[in-house]
Image (cartoon, rainbow, N blue to C red; front, side, top):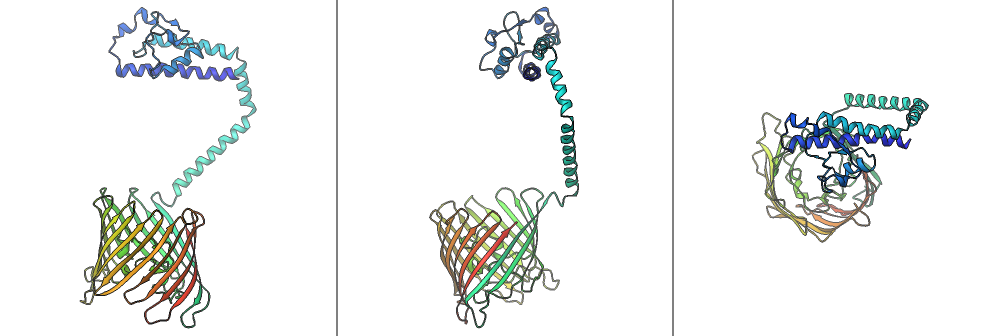
Length: 457
């Protein structure tokens, strides 16, 4: 059996060496006439017993190893009488026939009278049923793949989702709100890409929100709709690059303020459970977002980025339009791979009744000391201030985990403090226990224990 396989290998090796030499000749060798290629010398070949006998073949030549195997393992390489190989020269049909004949002689000897070929035929007959079964399975797989390709949902669209479920235990709730509650929110995103760098998103969101965290300003960061199991279109936007340094977004609804910015800077935005884990001043104007939104991000350098956004509140109404009720934002970011991430933000708008909103000026800062971060912001609105400060630790007690503690105060003196620990159970599931303190303006303080279970799929 081994001889048969060696015989089958000999032919391709020889042909590969021959055709490689021919290709080189066609591209690089000097032009040779037909008469010169068919002279008597060109077919007077001699058997070579060692590749070192060939005067014009060097170990540095790219085909040296192939020639060496043809000589040493198969003994079917021939050279010219002057012990040259002339590998960079085109060969004649006579030379091809002579070389092929030498290798065929070796193949016949390796087969050894046909016993190995009989063995191969016998094995084929013995395993005919198994080979037919495998062939049938391959045919079935090819048919299934063809059916999937013909009936797949989309070649450009992917379905992604997120489920946030909150188990809330009020240690000291407002008034008589002292019962354990459960709330959830689900988002289903249909993300379409036409170029691989753009995104057309249509989002459906549903859940419930009966105010289980009413004692903390802002409530949950992942809050459901106001009604029970209320389903609505939450996002429709198209984002796309313009060259290598500019990206843009056009939105039909629900895109406003911090949706336009490259980063919210503070490390609590995302891992935190309470809404004020993100900078609350982004939501202060609450004018736009129900209609058209447009934004652009300009990267002057890899670290310096300018964000601009404009969102309308009633742009779909013909008696209002897109320039009647709106808000806009400009944020200049410095994002590094080292110690400092920082931003300066300006926000303003028009409420639709001829009254201008009170503008907001804010500064955000995060200092990263190798996984231990100090972050926060300060914002001013016509003399009223809002601020946040805290610390966060990434990869705390495990890769992908995050722990943090922060305190935040809004423009109306409402207070929120939270300590959380976000644990990455696997790539789909994150579990976040949290303790949240809240004191809305004019209300008694409250204390909650919350466990948020987040699934991404």
